Length: 392
Ligand code: IPM
Ligand code: MN
Image (cartoon, rainbow, N blue to C red; front, top):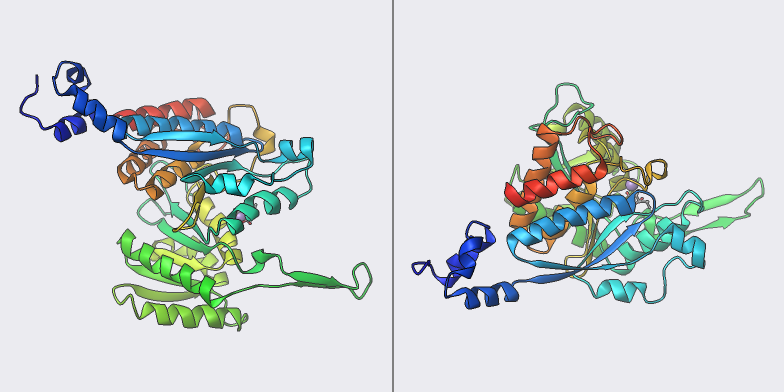
């Protein structure tokens, strides 16, 4: 009997799994069960996708389930077969209903898009970019954090030096696909590729970055990464907007770096950075470098975020076709993407526990983050993280 405890504190203890046995001896158990019933449920769309996508998504879900069991919320998954195999079978990249279906969920978990038998661009544009654009996921959030035990290619840099976040604009710039060919196929051919930057798009991205920097509450420094010395239209708009918005965030220190220089600083002085905001193309490029200094594609995760809509979380690496089906790919990036998904849903404690579990695994267990060299299989890594999530 536990008469001294309120239903709420009893419920919390049960959630922490320390009083599971008492649940069935206490006369209050009906109320407790009712509260558990009432706890939150989220609907998650899952797109395992191509190559190793399904393998890493399976481990991510294993870990998400461990978190949901421990922290008392429910995750209901609906799986969609979008990807190269479906395209080769049906000739259709995304079915008509896809975007509306995806809009009906609380969040999306994506594995990988890209198939060796499909011409580059078809699936990337037709699935990944289409979802980003149509669901207006205007932020691509990419944390660059070196976890304990992870090999870093930078000499003399450790976890204290590499911990920053790139806020990449995700619906504009060179990615809108604007352009044209003139005199195609002739010696006088012209190819035009347009970068579209709107005040609305730039401002909402910059505001998100300032808010994020404030919430992150580390160095409170936001760096604008651009190319004001050459791209004098687009980056004039970015810089003017940045300065104007900065006036509303006097607690945040602001910096500016050219994109070419920032690749240099990522290697030489990564400890300088807290939050970086940049456009779609530059963000794409610098976050691959970011992924390398945090230990590679095996660990790098990102979120395509619509703060007012449905967001999609993914490991940022590709579909790694040569490792498909071998149970050797590193699932940690997909697991971290799952953690970001929970954070976005407001399950911060669960998200934090996943991160601590991943750090436990990188710090004390894995030999390497590289596919086939982890010292464990894909499924074993998933098991290990799930176990730590249940117990840490
Ligand atoms: C990424 C990828 C995509 C991008 C490709 C696959 C279209 O490189 O998510 O960074 O360029 O955004
Ligand atoms: Mn990329």
